[in-house]
Length: 111
Image 1 (cartoon, rainbow, N blue to C red):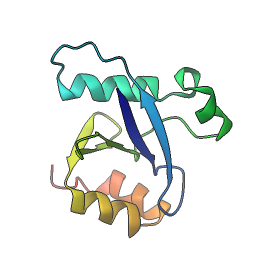
Image 2: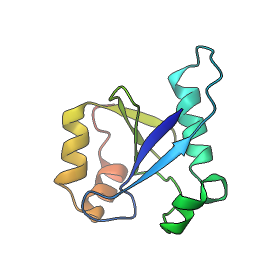
Image 3: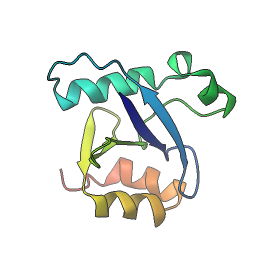
Image 4: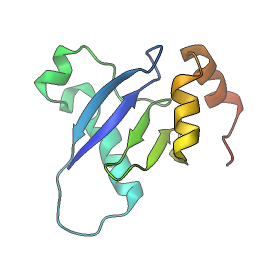
């Protein structure tokens, strides 16, 4: 299974995209387990050569994981926060990199 990660923590504008491949076990797996796997396999030492050629940062707090069915999850310092499409678009398009960091540290986005 390929999961798209919007690399927004270290890039201005719309950010960059890293595709993280995780094994499809064919079993029903909890979303939190998939998110943990995406975070782990989104580190540079586990990514495909094409991602390394793009010189992308590791998946970090402030990035957003997008599932194929359109669910979005913000990577937090500890854990993840599910975002609506509207929250994702607002976070991605309307905030600078510095404003995103402020939100991560001071706003809980509805927790």
